[in-house]
Image 1 (cartoon, helix red, strand yellow):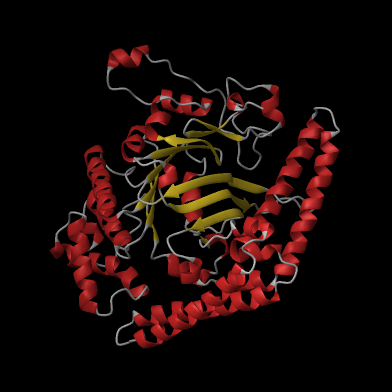
Image 2 (cartoon, rainbow, N blue to C red):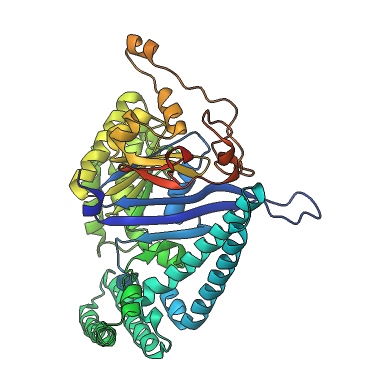
Length: 486
């Protein structure tokens, strides 16, 4: 497998949070309570790879998958998608950002000053619970400041260093206005009986002129050190968290999901052909009905079903066949990324192997990236290039599947893998099982500091006072003070 530095990132998730507000139960309750389903997840997913996600039931795996696709709108954090460029999409948040450059820079300066004041305050204090609380507060403000900074500088780049940005604002707005028109024309061009080829070509010429003007302006500051520094932050990816509903709907073509239940995920009143064709009808993929019918038959063959199954209803198929129909529907729009939310948990063992082999074959042929969520650790190891281990909404360890499976570092990963059944009785007797004491804490009121400390056999006083940093150990990322050299 190629080194991560050599591969292209498809999704870059930074400090993602998904908190669900709870209904207030008391008349004069002031503080809002939340279910912290995902709390500060950072993860890169590369093109053509499978990332496995494991953890106990209720730890936030499925929520993370749905939040990545913005089925649940994320509470905080950035989810950058690189399957399309910012110019291709021309989302409305770009215009909002450009029009508010001055106020954005002012807000960043205020947050920086607030963080510096808190830092100066807690650095004078001796180690105590109050100091660690101040430090955590400072870190949260720094994260918020960094997020505001990235929201701005990733779009305007080096222009962030200029005192007067009016010319840059005008040229950027002009570019994205033309790009948005092209995006709309491309959508119309897919409809039956519509030909917008000429208009698209004309607008592309306008876009090239607008981009040329921007490059000329950038070239004026190429020797400016501050401009070059901020220009390095410019990012042509799309921030999914900032998209409007209609814009995210457009990206559904690129990002799909295979659901856990092959029975409930298919409409019993629709034929197999209608189920698979429905995404194409919604997104105007293929101009004629005949082209869509041919694509449906092709998809049925890809997933190992017969083309004449097109007229049958879901109740006429077995569980494994229904899951294949669900996979065919997922592939209808030629996605680049698929969330597989426990796609084999409701199937027999022999059928599980067939579905896994099918997913691997499809990935090899189409270069699709998977987020594979499951409880069967041996199956996750088999299909995944990398594995992420989740506990109470936090990623505690991420690394290559062989490393994580055979040489786990985090105490929770070690306990999780010690519970994997071994078919050899002799080896199983010799294996030492790590039994975790206590129940999984509530995501409404998680433990302070490290969330695993209440069940960890290696927990110390430090674990209760501060969250462990995510440190790199070899090719792995681990959130544990045991590996923190500071």
